[in-house]
Image (tube, rainbow, N blue to C red):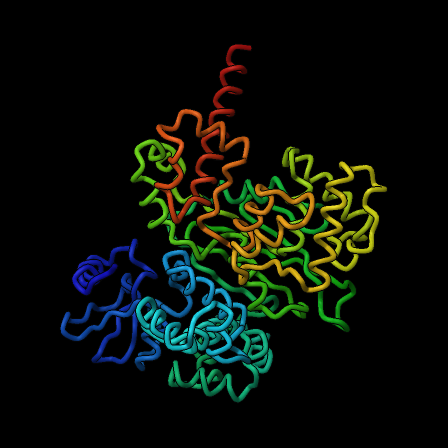
Amino acid sequence: MLTDEICERARQARDLRFDGRFFIGVLTTGIYCRPVCPGRMPKAQNVRFFPSGAAAQSAGFRPCKRCRPDTESPPPGITRYTHPVQRALRLIDAGFLNDRSTAALAAVVGLGVRQLNRLFQQELGCTPLAVARSVRVQLARRLIDNPGIRMSEVAEHAGFGSIRRFNDEFRAVYQASPGEIRREGGIKHGAVELRLPVPAPYHHEAVLEFLRARSLNGIEETRGAVYRRCVPLRSGASLETDSAWVEAELKTDALVVSVPDQVAEPVHGIVRRLRRIFDLDADGATIDGQLREDPWLRPDVDASPGLRVPGAWDGFETSVRAILGQQVSVARARDIAQVLVDRIGAGRFPTAEVLAGANISNLGMMPAARCHAVTALARVVASGTVRLDECEDAEELQHSLTSIKGIGPWTAGYIAMRIARDPDTFLDSDWVIRKALEDAPSCSQSDKWRPWRAYAVMVLWSRVARQREAILLERRKAG
């Protein structure tokens, strides 16, 4: 827990480790800043500390134009909050409160309205509605820097229900109209460009290699530090093709995103997908700090700090690929998925509706039981019985998946890690994990890693990969 004393010391030191973990409201100017703001430091008696940017905005402070806490600060680290708040935040980020009430949100996460509001006040310093407004306004602020987008399109992409609501909420935060803010910025043309801060520590190479090993031709690719994903364009788009590529370049401190014009999906949806894939909402410092408390695991965390659990662009696609990957290598699973794309999806990954009616056993790629599991999953997803996204409860999702014949605990757990974004899922049946734990001091070792056992899985996978690389290197030297 961050006390005012800790926040003050971090503010005085402009400590980068606290960037995004709290915000500073300056009473004399009415602005709020990041702890690393390069501006003149106000006196201690003139500042207030807030656990989130939304809390500062709710208190009437507007964003600083120098440190840009509304667009340049790291994400708040959803994993640091309690489970119901984590799930509520994911639903808010998905636009749940854009057209529904706090009571509906509370019902979905299994709480009363008063209890949900109390938890949000305790952990974020504001209400769920204030967080929802902050999410919309912050994305709109990023989009405004792209004058090629009309204001009505900014309102649509950021999740506002109307241009009037957009103008009202934007003015309430910035005390200026969207047009006035746009005129202050530089002129950019062409694709929409966004900068998503990457919180440190972050293991860039591990995430990029994870994505590179699983890329499907014509759908996604990873070259160097750039991840690209093919997305459909709007019907009737004034381009010769019906699709284009979203690009995301992973730099030291930011994910630089380029979204082509006339994409079918709102920009906020694409941003959510990329934040999931690159796991930008994790609090890496807290996760690594706790895992390091175990002396047995500490050398592996030190060897690969900032490991992440890469998420999924599409929940159904990743779930199908998890089934295809049962008891085969990553490369073999990718090859099988590529056959599905080429033969059934006509160059795109088949939808649940398509796979529900397809006879994939004719392709001769895998055992009949696995084919039946893919078909069964497609049918329950197509019917709406099962939803595969980060807004679902991880335990309930795993229960639903294991009730499908052919989907076992490993596959359900892997899906919970990557799609439901459960930070505590542990793949204790995974062969690599079991082998890594053979020299662990006790069979209950994983209990020490709660609630970050999914990240411990990535650490142990990394350990075994390093050991294999060392063996291969020794063999090359000997040969």
